[in-house]
Length: 492
Ligand code: ADP
Ligand code: ZN
Ligand code: MG
Image 1: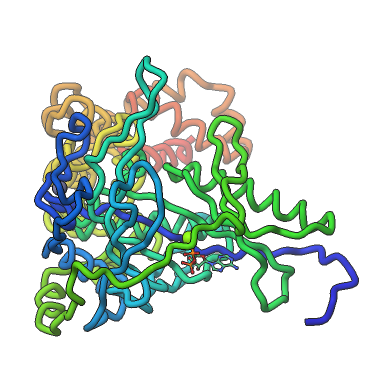
Image 2: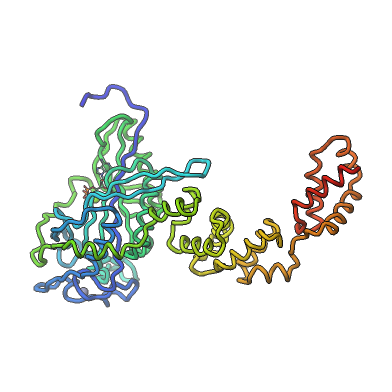
């Protein structure tokens, strides 16, 4: 490689993510202990997960099935022959002195994930990018050190020791913070869709370690990477990466070199700090786990699991575009959760105007859900009620504007639209006589404007329409108002 003589002005970021997903099994990976979160310390342990000598691990079949299911969803090759390895290191939360993981023969390899990149400023139709999955393998979790309580002591809780994890390692295909966040969100959606992980970052069911490096734009070789640990929310993933990007860029601009190291995200100071350098990196002395037989995965098992795969967000998105003729952006939003997608389809079934339904869900419904902190599954507005409301607009009972008010009240009170409209007297006024009376009142109240209109200031039509609508408390049929006003004003 030629030595560089000038400082390049532009750097490109290269990122690969390591994600640990806790698999949603009832019992641990190699013993029968419960995996339930939040139990009193050390109440969910046994000689196996406590690492007593002489015990033998047995693989939980559900862990294997969930791992295969995830591997298939991530378009991975499922290795017909794989095995577990021992990863040796010493730490108080690891009673055996090694973690059972997979190393040279992982279960899943060479997959990919498609992410919809955030849309441009216009807010429509982001592009789709494919990010490679290097591997996904099964392993056991370690325990947890607790540094709490009044005594000046630390304790170890081994309830988490032996809880099953799937480590999913991406290729270094990610090129921006936005892409990294989109990847992580998409991956979480898939895991939740598959029902193999609850996706809760705060409780540690999903953990993310970004590896990040910079290189001058145009250079082919990757730069030296830094691994970021201790990040437990999407916001922190974003902040930690943004900080690290700036830090590395500054070092490089000042002619320095990036050191390969592991850094921790400090939540209070909002900076990354060195945890360990390459020299201190562990030598894990991996070797095949002698207490477990190699895994031979028959094709029949893979096919069995494949049958249980639900329709995933990406195929659902494509189907929504194809079947309902809605824009990619709408389909993307509507397929972010299984429940939302299901709600949309249930509405379209009773009210077959997909784009109208999509508009109401994306604006009115999602806004109310966000404001009230509710989930769509809480069912504040059942599909047939939304359909009922939309039908009332179509048949002229209420105006689109009034419908929004009715919608808010439906959401707040859980009452059907017909009842609200009737009780509050919101039925649209389409009767020509009634509208003409309102028009006459308005024209009488504004003789000056009427005169100006007569002299050619035709943009005053909007003013008159507004006044009539106001007098009708929003209930007059706007089309009728327009038509009758034009006629009246033309007469004079
Ligand atoms: P380790 O086990 O030491 O963390 P891996 O080979 O598992 O190493 O890689 C970890 C992650 O780092 C992967 O997601 C990979 O894509 C990413 N990665 C590798 N090289 C680079 C680089 N130069 N810049 C950014 N990310 C990288
Ligand atoms: Zn146990
Ligand atoms: Mg790593």
